[in-house]
Amino acid sequence: MAAAAKRGKQGLKAGAPAAHARRVFRVAVQSASPLEAVKRHLLLETATGQQPVLRLGGRTLSLKEVDRIWVVGAGKASAPMALAAERLLGRRVSGGAVVVKYGHGSAVKRVSLFEAGHPVPDDAGVAGAAAVAAIADEARSGDLVLAMISGGASALLVSPAEGVTLRHKQECTRLLLACGANIHEMNAVRKHLSALKGGQLARRAAPARVWALLLSDVIGDDLDVIGSGPCAPDASTFEDAIAVLRRYAVWDRVPKPVRDRLQAGVEGRLPETPKAGDRLFQKVSNVVVGSNAQAIQAAADEAARLGYRPLVLTTTLDGEAREQARMLVAIAREAQASGRPAKAPLCILAGGETTVTLRGQGKGGRNQEFALAAALALEGTRGITLLAAGTDGTDGPTDAAGAVVDGDTLGRARKRGFDPAAVLAENDSYPLFQATAEAVMTGPTGTNVMDVYAALVLPR
Picture (cartoon, rainbow, N blue to C red):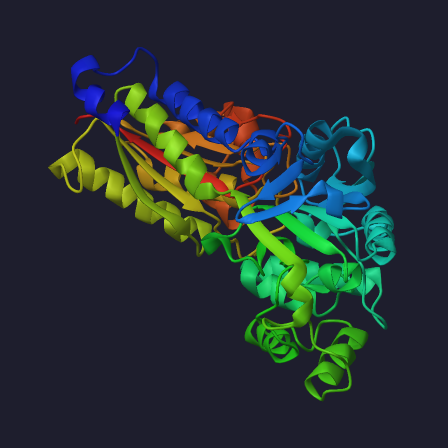
């Protein structure tokens, strides 16, 4: 890349590595702006004397063929995505509804905004999902439904299937979060307890056209996993959902109506979610408009501008947060000591989404847990700074996006009365990073493309 080519000539920019790490993360978040993502992909073209044409991906549609345009959606970034559609289409938007996490709204005008609970769904999410479902049910053959789906939609678009209540879904979500299930596994269960997920929003909107714009927060950008794939063919089955619950030894702990529904599905007494090849998807398009890979590339470019040699390890990082943190620290130490896999000054980057198996009763999130585990591995080390933060600006049930740590973090924590190892064991990283002023605090960013991990390595 051009920026990387200039790095050796200009040297490191002035500033502490912690400030550089925060800058790299900030640029990554800015690159994932949902407004800009929609503007890049949803295009309105008007030629002289011709009807306007709407384009998305490889699809084109003359607005002469469209009776009404509806905008629906769910996820932490769905409000600014809807706002982008409103700005593009103006009065052509007949109405709509989007469901966002509390505090993540935007000033939409023609689309109704619902704020709701995340990651555990609540009654407000049920109300928002009902509004989305009502619009899908109203859509006719000549209508176009624009579905704005981003990270968080799985919890926010909560429409319990027949026989299942919100309380049942809440308990399932809590159990799966606590046992460390990944997003693919959680969504396999969610889709089979929902009336909208797993392609069922598109099923309800048929025979209208459905164009879904997806801001991906899942590893691999799988269409049926982003937001639990409300407009995509579902690759998972009732059997898969049961297998997940058994794998984590929670099958006997989930509410009985959940077990009854999943078992009825396996026995063929309930219809499966729509699969690939279903005729309804002939009028459906799913397009990824923003992803973690784009954010990590922007971070790499900014690191090069600051004078670091950027090295992208992966955009598919997953697994236990504390284990992956130790791995990233080990790579950074090797680079500093031997120049392998690259020489310092170096910015090692990764993207993805780790998990935490809860064993304690503390307050934190996967990124703060990652950072604290890294700090334990870095104690006494000079010249290595590590950041772990979520692009949505919130980490777990906290108002921090993550944290920045180095070899002195544990010393700062102990001076303030913390036992870092005990804090990690209790999953209680948030109070520690608030006390050491190492938390990354951005507020809601309006986007969500998973997490960013950056290790800045200076020469030994």
